[in-house]
Image (cartoon, rainbow, N blue to C red; front, top):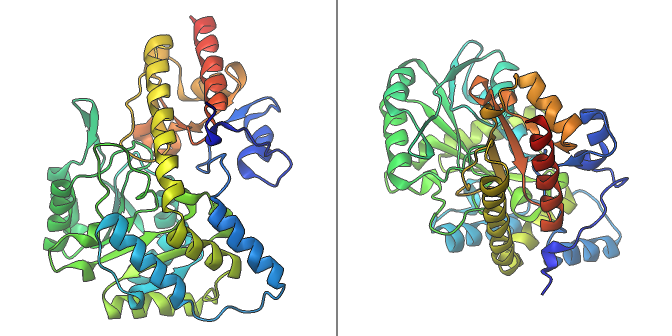
Amino acid sequence: MTNKFDTVITRQNSGSTKWDDAATLFGSTDVLPFWVADMDFPSPPAITEALAARVRHGIFGYPSPHSYAYDAVVSWMEKRHNWQTKPAWMVSTPGVVTAITLAVQTFTKAGDKIIIQPPVYPPFFASVQNQNRTVIENPLFYKDGSYHMDFDDLAVKAREAKMLILCSPHNPVGRVWSRPELAKLLEICLENNVLVLTDEIHGDLVYTGHQHIPLASLETGTEDKIITLTAPSKTFNTAGLYTSIAIIADSELRRQFSQTIQKLGINKSNVFGITALEAAYRHGAPWLDELLIYLEGNAEYLTEFISDNIPALKVNKPQGTYLAWLDCRNLNLSQQELVQFFAKKAKVGLNDGITFGRQGTGFMRLNFGCPRPLLAEGLQRIALAVKQLR
């Protein structure tokens, strides 16, 4: 029986970064794109119907303060993540990456040191460096088939840092951090008065046997030392609507953050983004439950295919996200050769591992948030190219 997520929808000539920019980025029109992290699935009907109703209304003036949407976020966090939040804690932002930059501007000054944990989402580096702050790396390490945090190293580096930016679940390695790991990280940061900025945009995309735990939900009484950033964009494929939420329990931190937004004149929200956010969090759960089954099936298909057909590559099934972190070091190619191999020989567009930090040398990131027929074709292309390389 065909799964609805198997349907391949043409995205070329739709203004899609993922598809329409692929030829320029990878140098060929016949490259299958598995790079930028949006999915090739339609958003749930609850969202498209809500947007259609908003369009039919026909008037798109300035939106009022959207407490009704914040109520939907509160309900979602309680039901999906057992996290008690309040509408008053929430600040609307035009995207999580923008919110990271805003937080860096607000709570640190030029020259301050900010900890990140590479290999990690490239905008973490840029959000620090573009504001003339200093990146301090607390690299993850690989052991027993999984990536882990280096707490001994963190304890040393936290002594001189002002902020830590956490990726939870982690992009690109796919880790869903456990409660003990999060508690230890928070303990170290609190001891050193390090503000934690936690990007939890992938928090709803977690697979069997794992649970996303919002950092601020830990029962430590210290949620006021944490700024949580989230959005429906990864979960429900609404990234192009640029609507996200910062959840800040501490009133003074929230005031300062909101003041930065006001000063920059970006305190108005997109009426369609608000509409989609509310519809997603009020009515999107059944669709998400189906999506997670399909994505986990994709993850299992990918890892089994690579194990059986491309043993020169190594990959662990991610615990969360729809991103696979491919270890390509056994191909014995330089990083530049590796990038060219996938684009020119395999005809697939992946993310260059080095953009996630020097720890990504020899790695590539593959987005499997797509219909399985597309994933199968991409993996077949890689398998054939590797065979020819040998």
